Length: 400
Image (cartoon, rainbow, N blue to C red; front, side):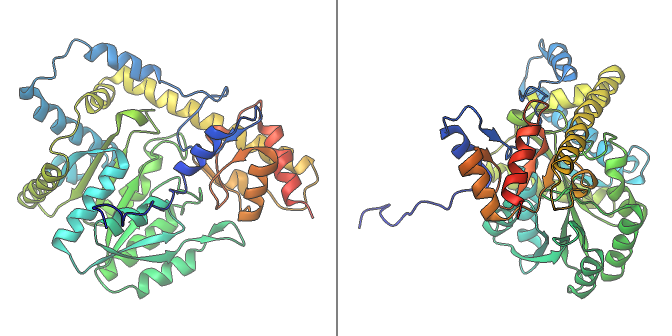
């Protein structure tokens, strides 16, 4: 046997394989509803005006070695303030450790490696369902995973009591992965009172919450409102971890800009944790890029650019909401037997349709409409020009 004869093809990723199938389809009718990045009403990627202006502001900067460390440290501080809030003691007292990451995926992977290093016998509890890559990230970091109840396929809403029971029944001091807003793939989030109850049980059980926040602003159009879950946990005195991504809310997907941070007991502990995160980064890819973080910090530290960003986030979310309303109304006008109210009850980038794998397969085969096998539809791919086609296709595959 030769050196690599035993290497077999890896299973296809459930998300990237959708795009591959879409690209190979010659049909002019084809729709790609699998991609989780924002598109305008013409179906085109968007470069935010705030990003354009930030790029102009830093165009004369020289990315010298002497400025890299300072720029990255500033980016981490700015990211933490955005997630945790400027007024929390965590920020004022420097009780956080953080490093730039290669978007949200890299941030999750860094925390998974950190968990493996210091709690090698622990496991990560992941909601059911969750972003498929979550399981792969912790598996490849050699951290065991379990699931906890989250989504109710019958009501297409939150299984809150089952979720609470799973939190109570998990071993004390367990790690839990939480989506603070715009849950991927379901678009179903706990409300404020439910987050308070979850935080209370976490306190009793001494669980460690790790928030994966890839969509701050994309759930409600309000950056502060979308961080409420994290603020609740901070108010209750939790130590916690957070992965942040600026791929969706700033349209910086190709820049891979993210941050991982951990709230610590005190500044001394934060310094130790940061040094360990830096060591993991050093052995993994040595150093993260600086251009993307500079763009983010420039926007967050310029009052006019930040206000413009907040306006543009609101524009994006308003379009997603309009498409939800239009899709629901069109389906209801077709006299579909099903209830479609969950389309507008869910929030964020995705609509968790409840379509079966057979129905998803038929949408692809007969109508050239591509989505993940679990029926997750990216509302960013739905436009004024294709929403009627999508609604009619869904009606056809779901009617009795």
